[in-house]
Length: 357
Ligand code: KG4
Ligand code: ZN
Image (cartoon, rainbow, N blue to C red; front, top):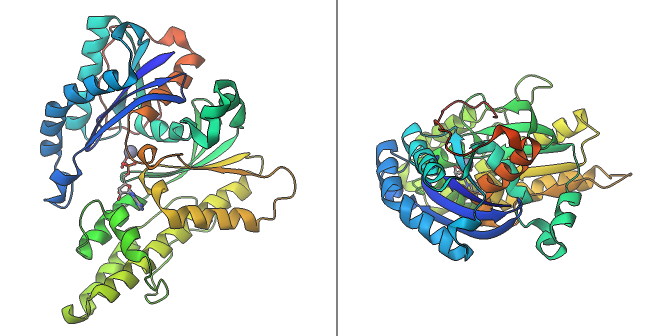
């Protein structure tokens, strides 16, 4: 089954064609990063106007790159929310029109569910092994740490489309904290890649920044206090001392504080759910190398006796941040569960609500 995915929830205009939920035939992403770098963040009105300009060219490119005709596309999947309403509507309207005009089945996808399915895309040599191997490879239950710009959750997934929220952000999501701290340090937008580059060779021990774990046993996250601690440290340091060395050490100290909390919370959730077979990392911050290393280290330290726990993160950096391939992948597995729920020429309305489906 070939699904055309469309994603416009924030500042990426993206279209992709994915076969059977894992094989990426095309994955076109137009990023508005350069545009928003000028304002140091996304201005919703500007993002929406850019989506309008890029939607059709990106769509056409995805079809051409997939080397298929419209008649070979079985369904259209689109991000319904959460996200910026004015951005989402460009994607949903495009999907609605395609569905009406070409009689394609419409599948709405929740954005975070999309990120979760980025771990199904061509991961770990599945492409070589084939579809059956790919489906057989992921073992439920899976515990997922989603770390993106807008959201930060711990989710227990017992099967396709079966999600239980174990913890979520109470204020700034991890990616948002990266973006805000990068802004404080004058490192530009987006902050995640800028901070991790700056942190290389920095002294992560120089600044004693807080690790906020909240109440005992809580699997929720809070990063706004950490951001304020960075701001206070920067304010009390004379400008002349805020040199390259200072920024490197601050970036490294901040990154380490975020990574430690994320990795520890994931392991606490795992301890509370020992039947979990796989740990997955998804969302923009899953691109962070230190975070991957910190989780792997903790897994190794558990000295797993029985069957080893499998740790996955998206197989390509292009699947970590917003893309439409993950939307098409999620749509496939959700559609397969109950195909009778989906048909052509329905009308998808965007939403800012977080509700999983
Ligand atoms: O998932 P995503 O593309 O968008 C949302 O759904 O929000 O995540 C974007 C976030 C941004 O905050 C960006 O700074 C962060 O992911 N990010 C990173 C890295 N690459 C992107 N954060 C830390 N380290 C990175 N290497
Ligand atoms: Zn996202």
